[in-house]
Image (cartoon, rainbow, N blue to C red; front, side, top):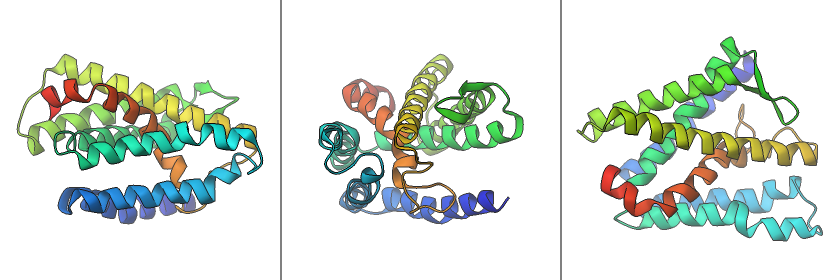
Length: 218
């Protein structure tokens, strides 16, 4: 319960600041926030995964996490792609929240017990439902449009799978390093990489198909 309270408080306080900075401040403010988070990951959290002298430290760093954050910053600064980040963050955040809640309440069937014992099929399904509802509400009440239901179901499913893969990938890295969290910056959550693992994988997809997505979501 104490862990849940910490997680809830962190989500409400820092999550609100994160969303408000994106919605109501110039894009460069949000870009500076992303740069700050990336620097924390590089100089504080990444060393928990690999020793500074390890070649893996330097070989992986440009691709993960630097490249995904670079793509996020690029899309945030580009007027055409800026709003895509709203859908990206909302889907992944809804998926993470739903997975955590439903998984803790009803989860029993493990997805990858050797990599991430806490991940369950029930949790993933609950996260997907949360993400579908979240995207539907965003498009209906914020964007003022109605997207085809099959598109919402398929698109959300794809992004949730990418977020899950990103989560499992970081969990695998933590298992290899013998750590539980990437850091302690976020009470109840761990480190910033623990919160951005799913977003980073989905960000690559958003960047590759950004023009197609803008035609539908932009």
